[in-house]
Length: 179
Image 1: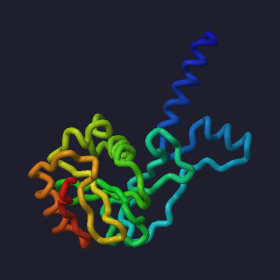
Image 2 (image 1 turned 90 degrees about the horizontal axis):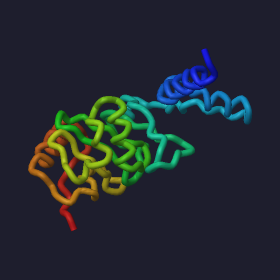
Image 3 (image 1 turned 60 degrees about the vertical axis):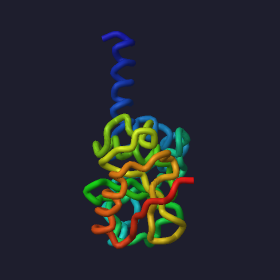
């Protein structure tokens, strides 16, 4: 085995560890050892109203966040979710919401990683609206969500998806008129 084979093997291991959400990557371990900083993924304190923890969004656009944002599936209430929180509502009524404001782009990246949306969704959700889901935004601190302001057009399927969401959740969904 020559030096290039060893380097390639190490790079492959690093890449595998980089995308493993359960364990810190090799780079994280080195950083933690060298600087004495814990780099483990935070575990959110979950209350029964938060719903099921899907994962964390650790980026804002392409910048790493100091505190990753937990994303929950079907929270019972919006207590603890910030004003303007963003989410994605699916046609079956499931909703995934970030505890704090995050970019839909980054939320769709997490949903793509989990196999919930097609791989090209983060780049074009607003230009090619889906009949299967809608990017939504919480209106202030209210119990109401509207479609993302990134959409230029509102397909008929949005009202159908909102109707299903209104049947399933205690909070409400409505079409927001485009400016």
